[in-house]
Image (cartoon, rainbow, N blue to C red; front, side, top):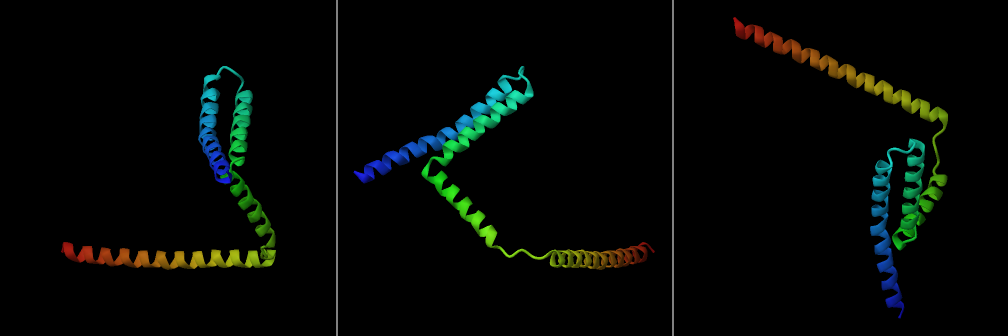
Length: 126
């Protein structure tokens, strides 16, 4: 009997997951269909419809799993040891310095290759 209840729940979940994009598509169609209304009302209506569709998706088993994952990710972000302001500034300046040095090296290489090609082309013309 439990397997039958799970199967019914999964069928309703599938129906909800299929209806969610259809509701969003209907909202977008309604947004353009009612173009004679004020833009604010159309945008608010679209936001309400998309919110309802997302809410409907979160009532499914997969939606609850996604919600649980987002909650756990939020808790994990709190545990992260963020760098201090001094470390961030030092790292940023180091990145700028390295980009400048690599750019300078590539510019010099480009100038040398340009000079070498001009030298080879001028010898080939004579």
